[in-house]
Image (cartoon, rainbow, N blue to C red; front, side):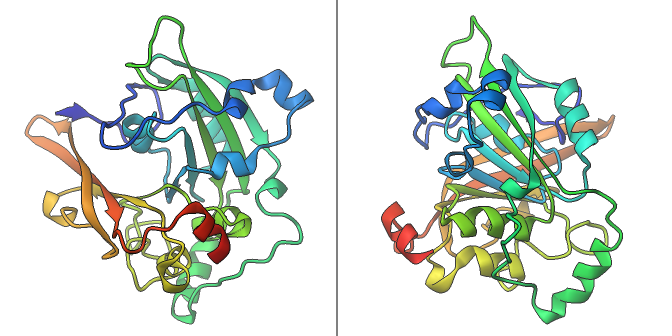
Amino acid sequence: MEIYVNNLLKMEVRINMINELPIMNIPKWMMDFNDSNFKEKQQFPLKEILTDSLFYPASGFDDFPIKHLSGNILSFVYSDYQNSKDELVKNINERTFDGYTSVLSQEINIYEIFPKEWIPEFYPDINDVDRFHELYKNIKMVPFVHWSIWKRNKGKNDSHGPEFFSLLFVGCESTFVYQALYLRLKIIPKIIAIIQPGAGALGGAWTKFEDENKFFFSILRGPKNKWLPEYLFYGGKGPNELYIKPCWTHYETKIHEFITSKKQAQYYEEKRLVCLWRLRESIIRTKSEIERNC
């Protein structure tokens, strides 16, 4: 059994990957970046970051996808509106991924994500508007974007993890982030992570991301399910029975199962189950089909 941590603070996190998905080649744009040449020579490579990425809405600072899928995925895109830029930077500065060093840690202009002329194509259903506004009026955080690239330390080989991986964190509401990034640029993430997003009276999300009848899934699926990512990374803490099936019926084949535990007290052990599911074969689209249908 593996030990997991809920956030990116204080502890070293060991990078793993799974055999059921291919190992990705490191793209040249990722290897070329560091703090100095980013500022002087390079444009922010947003499309490259989004291509074949994992998108994690309502992510908080949860490192679970990075810990278990780095190598199978090289670009991780996180989004949440409950953490400030200072909290994220402090988080990155105080933690390490085991065997990795940050070679780029850069604030990105918010207009790179939300161009001034951009207008969301989809808005919440009228039944969700009240909760949307109720939560939003209490949010004091200023939207922000932070990008970091991590490089494997010398002396570590491919068995330890990929040479590089990228983490883009957008501090803003996730349904609009998804539209501004993926729908606007006609790119679909390789994997969508839905890991206990926390809607409801005790959670901070205004909509139920895992509910097929709610707003997020409606923009994710698109017309006739043509926009769905190929893989769903779904799960959470609590009884395994809650997460033994995918939250969305369009995903049928279980690719990999992660069962982890964390001792919270002498007689209590907190368990977490997260499974990787593949989209029904009849729905999977090629990249050219995706570009035509977005």
